[in-house]
Amino acid sequence: MVLGSAVFAGRIGVGWGTAHPSEIFNGGDPSGMVSRIQWTSWGGATANADGSTSIFKPGGGYYDKLVPAQLHAYDLGRCTAHGPLAYRRLSVREPSRPGGPFGKWGSWSGSKTLCRFGF
Image 1 (cartoon, helix red, strand yellow):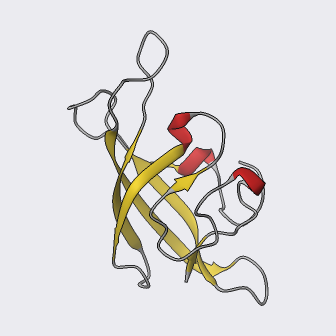
Image 2 (spheres, rainbow, N blue to C red):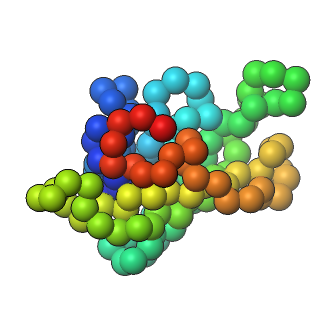
């Protein structure tokens, strides 16, 4: 079982199409990366994880410290007819400021699927 497809973020992506990745990255800015990921219930209908990510400061730029992020992988199926079972959707949430409460769940990069290139 893998997280989406290796083609999801193209050649610059990290962690996509692999089993329980410890890091995912879309390429681009730091908010597109979650590191130090620790998964629970991997292999079940859904998988949950905690990790660390960068968030924007209100005035621009990023906070100096990473903040916690929560991940929820779901929609188990195949990205291609003969491909491995994959979690085809991913939700994420993080605080809006370091030390703050977690915000609402949202789709990773606004994507509807982790199976194809593009967001």
